[in-house]
Image (cartoon, rainbow, N blue to C red):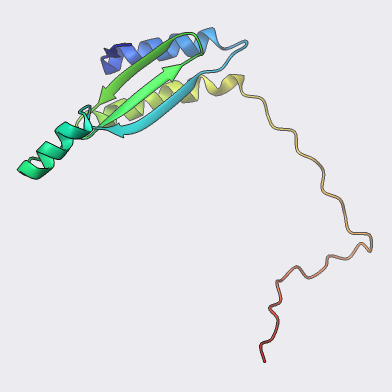
Length: 120
C-alpha cells in the first residue's frame, strides 16, 4: 500500500463511492502522523527539532485500500474537496426509522425536572 498524492486520492475515493452506491460501504479514517518511527521522533525531540505532523487519510471498501498524507499547508484545500465529495455521495444513505414515543397514561405531561434529595 503506497501513498497517493491528494488529488489522485480524491479521484479514487470518488470512484470507490460510485462503485459502492448500490451496495457496500466505504470507510474513511483520519489520524495525525509524523510518518516517522518513534525512535526517530524521540531523537528529533531531544535534538530540539520541530516534528512536522501530517494528516494520514485512509479509505477502504473492504477489497481495496488507498491512503494519502496531507500537510498543514494543503489541509484547507484538501478538506474543502473532501467535503464536496462526501456531500455529493451521501445520497445512498437511508433515513433512520424512529420508534414512536409512548404517551403517558394520564395524558398530562409530568414535570420532568430532576429533584435532588435534601441533605441533613
